[in-house]
Amino acid sequence: MTENNNQNESNVIYGRNSVLEVLKSGREIDRLYVVHGTHSNSISEIIAKCSKRGILIKEIAQAKMDYYCSGGNHQGVAVMVASHEYSTVEDILDYAKSENEAPFIIICDEIEDPHNLGAIIRTAEACKVHGIIIPKRRSASLNSTVAKTSVGALEYMRVARVTNIANTIDMLKENGVWVFGADMDGKDYRDFDYSVPVAIVIGNEGKGIGTLTAKKCDEIISLPMKGKINSLNASVAAGILMYEVIKSR
Image (tube, rainbow, N blue to C red; front, side, top):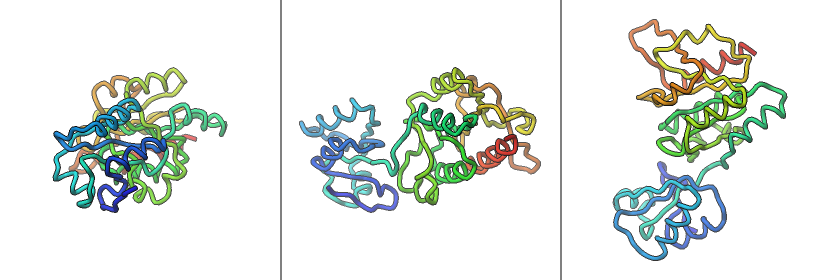
């Protein structure tokens, strides 16, 4: 199996036979890369297998694939494997129950910067968050940058990757979890009691929480801004809110 050490995509495995072997092994795969216009029976087989498993498939330019694979003989196909095994939302809820604690969950709504996701995971582990939920699309995955930025915390954190954040929020609410979305136009975050089962939604670095996601939240909360800027880095905002939950418990 050929695996490169590119600083941006160090979890990339490339080459048709290598990719097929990874698929057979059952290893957690974040996404499949295929070079535009590449067609063969083996690549069609790889695409079909990935599609069946719900793996994100992306077509990219030859030059980008060359870069990801550090010039290796990728044969037009590569996969990015996860640095850590994903959990399920049910795993997260079961873990909270096993600890006899009200669920404490962080939902990352399209956090695309792996450094932000890694920092959120690190703080979440320190705060004994029971689990983190991320979407399959338009989100940083559990790659090597996330693992490194979390400084070991990823090994202890349950991270569930879901197809639809809005549907997942509905499922959490059915399980008695109150969902608070962090956004600029919300109520003061200090005005609430977080001793209940709680999930905090942290939005995209630039766009914030998606419109549908915001509608699904029980409350929209915000951090007061006293200076000239009107927003904080996603991981910083997440950290403040996580420690507020701790204070309520």
